[in-house]
Length: 217
Image (cartoon, rainbow, N blue to C red; front, side, top):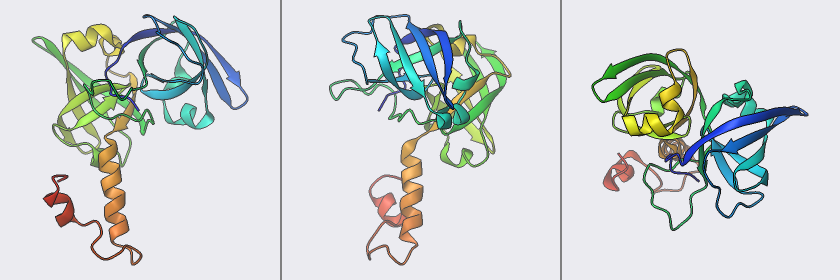
């Protein structure tokens, strides 16, 4: 689990095909304290397992499913990526709960410079927009951002100078593809509501009234 608070940038130093998947070599732009083989690291919002790791670099396996559902298959040596190590129970939750399981690839459709920040319009694949709400949270390339506004098939987010400076958003422009992970809570609520309509759901199960009374909607 992650928070969407990027810890620093990394640089792709190599990408090698491994069967139908790939091996990704990454040089970290910050010290990886107490590195452990097998630990989870989010790369542009995608949770990967480090199969080898040192204080400043690691190699991760990328599955065929991940290559098809994210932008990782388009990476090349020299590309910069956002890095976040897995959340510890003692850490501050500064962003929102991010699983590192990308839902789809979006595209930057517009970028406006407004005073001290940039306003991005990002398209999303069919069906994902129902999980994106105004003032809700969304992860873009692993960055926790607040949704300014949303409509069918797209949403807008504002990126402050600090975020642009320490993440890849400062390098992104119109036409760039980005990994999108919607708020996981919305997906769970949708599934629970769908289950509540089935005959197998016990009496007194999940309902709109129950969710409203407990502050979910």
